[in-house]
Amino acid sequence: MKEIHALLQQAVALHQKGELARAQAIYDEVLRTQPLNFDALHLSGALARQQGEPQRALDLIDGALAIDTRRAIAHCNRGVALQDLGRYEEALASFERALALQPDYAIALSNRGNALRHLGHLDRALESYEAALRLSPGYADALCNRALALQALARHEAALDGFGAALRLRQEYPEALHGAAVSLLALGKPADALEGFERALHLQPEYAEAWCSRGALLLRAQDHEEALASFQDALAVRPRYARAQLGLANTLRAMGRRDEAVEAYQAALAFGADADTVGYMLAIMGAEQAPGASPAAYVKALFDQYAGNFDRHLVDVLRYRTPSLLVEALRRHLPPGELDVLDAGCGTGLCGPLLRPLACLLEGVDLSPHMLDRARDTGLYDGLYCGEMVGYLRTRPASVDVIVAADVFVYLGELKPVFSVARLALRSGGRLAFSVEAHEGAEDFVLRSSGRYAHSRQGIETLARSHGFAINEITPSTLRQESGEDMRGLLVILSRG
Image (cartoon, rainbow, N blue to C red; front, side):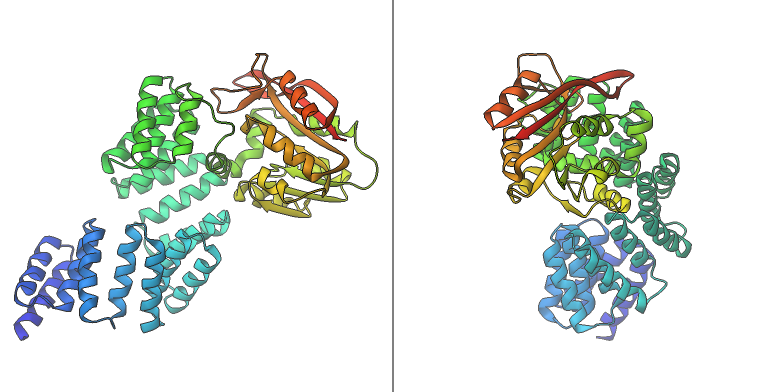
């Protein structure tokens, strides 16, 4: 027995020094003598996870827990292995079990926060991280993970403070550097973000997520060759990484390498990328039939990504004029009396200052929670709701006098569903005001290479009349700049009979 204890002490010392192969050899030696040795099984499981084998880790730890279910550390390590496998509900249960056995277990509290964060329970995750930090104020991982939860809530300034605190405790901390760079990018500081991604990669060259983040930033900056190289580096580290493969495909599409892009999108689908998003990208290139609308997940991700500098980019770079032009047209046809107004697809609230003087009650709905956070900061809206526009309008019969959708229907090809629910939501005599990109063809709508839909005047007129709308105005207009060229569109004001 003393010999087994000495062997385990030796293995643990090697394990802590990172000499994993030698440690595992001793754990195996113990298990040959005592196949039901709790410590050898449990620590072999912890080592397997370090080696990137979460399923093997789970099997070994379950073997240890079959011997003794009272060890909080084993339940905690089991939860971490389950998280690696993406089984977050089960991981949360393991962390709860660890905390039932040992309530003051800071590591379990922090990991419980991670499971809650992945499950989308961000407020509860923050509470768990705070509890861990009360027990262990210098716990760098809890500080970093808490900052990730704040980042998911679009509280980027607070997130940066958290990442900074973690980095003061652990200077060589690639995850904190990467997290800080993500928040810097969201705050409109791409140069600082790029430096952060590259610092993280200098410390950890096999950091696939950081390669992807660097690639996405460079793709937005139209540095296609460097973006392509970043996604290729991510795939070299993690060969079936769907995010990296999708980024690679997007870059090839931006470079005009159509056939390679199609093949790359098909590979991304095989790696587990969102099927609706991949199908949509293939449709943009004409490789599949265009769907009736952009996938909700695609639109949400697009606008969550741009929330930090969306307004500045639209106004300063694209010379975006749609809100002012559309509300100016609406003013010519407003119904009488006090008005309840819905800003559908409100985004960051660019229409808010223009609509507020017209509205007794001003509400907004949008898919992107990060955009809504920016709209909330304006203080102009009486209510803001996160959700899909058609589904939201369906729940609001005869509740509003005016619905405004500025630059929203560019992500909807088939407009019949939204016309139907808009008519349902409007009171008698109410107005529907919206903009579309214009096209001159025979089709009612087309999906452009930009990933946006364009609509014909004739198609809108036919659809409006078939849904009982009177046409107050359809005015051709320049909505913004696109690659230095005017983007032609239509401003449409309809009234409900």
